[in-house]
Amino acid sequence: MEPITFTARRHPLPNEASVDFGLQLVGSLPVHSLTTMPMLPWVVAEVRRLSGQSSKKEPGTKPVRLCVSPSGLRCEPEPGKSQQWDPLICSSIFECKPQRVHKLIHNSHDPSYFACLIKNDAANQQSICYVFKADDQTKVTFVCSSLQDSFEATWLFCES
Image 1 (cartoon, rainbow, N blue to C red):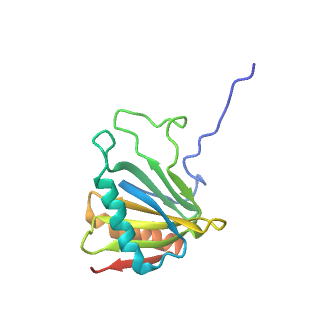
Image 2 (cartoon, one colour):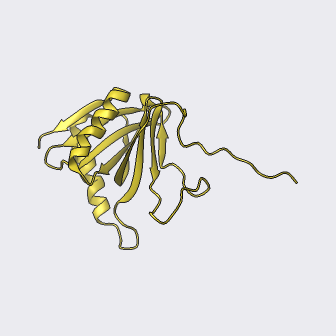
Image 3 (cartoon, rainbow, N blue to C red):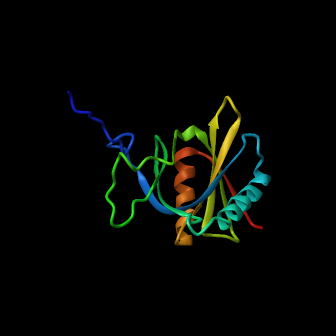
């Protein structure tokens, strides 16, 4: 009997420059791909509202690592301090190519939160809005700039 072998991919290309950010995933919500920019702050507010209603057994936010590279965006659960990364347990929450990231949202009244809208696929015309929170609000502008530079996504900066 032959042993089962597998290759664990941590980065799409080993020599590729990648920036990793430790964030909290507040939640996500599927939306129609034709959702307009003015509607996105309401989508983000709904994700935050739903996260606030989570039970004590399931915390509202999850620690994640957001990996930004020229070949794509990957979000994976952050293992606890006592846990080691295990490819059999740790799987990506999402992974996508640059062209699928099409909108970024940052609100000046909630500077530690931001969201990105990712096209799911062309067949069902659905996108998913992922809302993140940074422990340090100054990190949000850097994360959004990295995403915008890498993916040329539309950035919505809300003042209200």
